[in-house]
Length: 71
Image 1 (cartoon, rainbow, N blue to C red):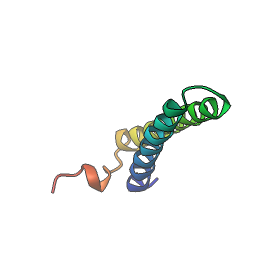
Image 2: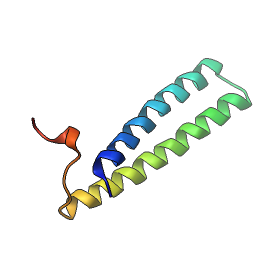
Image 3: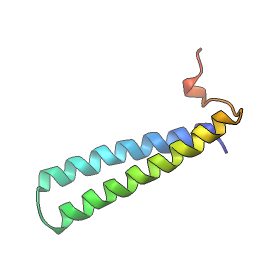
Image 4: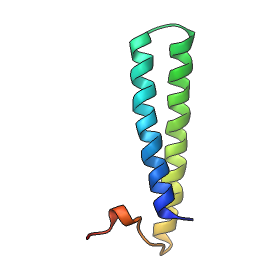
């Protein structure tokens, strides 16, 4: 597992969740809004899964992502 890639994917998913949720909230109702909220939920599950992978990696002695290391 590459912790740098996993962290980048988590950050990308979080940004997509924010964008999709904002778009769905602007629509307020309707099928497209519901689809967007469902997509955001799917992304939340993916974030949780990737976080669990990263936690297992670090807990088992793997290194931190570079962005989490002190300079």
